Length: 492
Ligand SMILES: Nc1nc2c(ncn2[C@@H]2O[C@H](COP(=O)(O)OP(=O)(O)OP(=O)(O)O)[C@@H](O)[C@H]2O)c(=O)[nH]1
Ligand SMILES: [Mg+2]
Figure 1 (tube, helix red, strand yellow):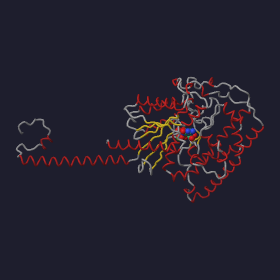
Figure 2: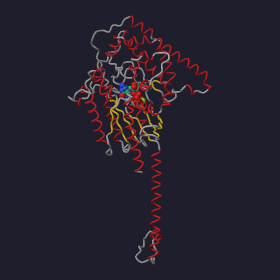
Figure 3: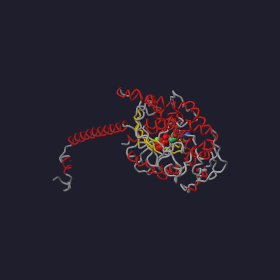
Figure 4: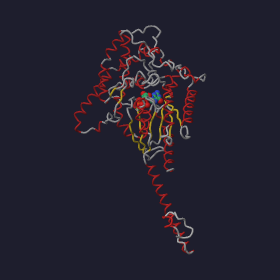
């Protein structure tokens, strides 16, 4: 054993140690060889790192759309599809016709139900200003007080319209069958697209609620005609005949649908029941002349506005062919937002690059359809807090969309006061810009306080039904998400 060597020296370092009697020339050669070996090894390491980073850079960017039900997640997804999947968008346009016809007809049928109740001697006590109910009152029947004001006067004209529009019941059933729609299974979990449109208070407890509809598959009902196999010929011809028959009945009912929708007494009935219709059904009901025709073809706006509730988690793959993300592939996950659906989100947190979180700001005076005790804005705050405080999502880019700006503006203009529902709003002006600033600050504070690591607060004020403005927002969002994705890959 050489002098000065520790007894317990590692055998490997002993093996690699220079010989004790090394000459200066040998030492120089050894050091040169060692330096070359080190360089080679570093180069290999760099190469491996670069390959790993490239792999990571080239792997799809995974984006989750999160937010409560009716916050606008699927509508945001449609904005991506409209911008980047034009061929598919065109191919599916005709299939959306059925959904739009159904949105329209369900709207009318719901009005007919309410009318029938009124004519038969009045429904359960009308919901007087449900939106004015204080947060504490929740589901209590005391939230519902008989309305004041004169009796609504329904005439023979209303009865006649009700009779003449009766065929729409069958059309609704046929359309639901063709789309493969299932009504929500849990009554506390479902609500009607008409009775609870965004911007409306939720229907009263005890009142009969129509079930909102959803399909299990995001694609099964979107079968473009040219994609059918020849063996489906007979079935396809039958389907085409059905489509024509539906369009005929709807066109035949157009004038009566318009008459009932525009009738002042019916309008007054809806106002007294606290039913607002500015969202999906209202959008189509205001355009009956255009939609209730035999050869109706949905416009881009119609497709964007069509409402079909999402169930579970649906994956959409988008290959970007323009814009800041050109060349990259994104997997976008659209999730169902109601409370019982949220458990399905968690498995997707694991390797998710970015979250676009939608918080509808117009709903400060509304309650969750699935739990009337919960204010919808409070629910959004709670969900946001859960997302930004998650350790699993600490490295995920999170972008907030304060959505439904248009409906917020409309609501404030109609005289609804924020401070009656959000007490901390105090004496701030009841104007849209002030309100947005206030809500935005609240979301920012939650992020600052609860994020496990400091992260930027990125938010956009949106009305995702406005596809032009949304395209501009999305390009900013895409750039940011991609930049973060590449940075994360470089840090590997
Ligand atoms: N006016 C207006 N309507 C909106 C906006 N965003 C969404 N909507 C409407 O709100 C309704 C719900 O939108 P969706 O995108 O289906 O909501 P979601 O978050 O996917 O809901 P779930 O699938 O139930 O979780 C639809 O009728 C949309 O047309 C908006 O910014 N302005
Ligand atoms: Mg959805």
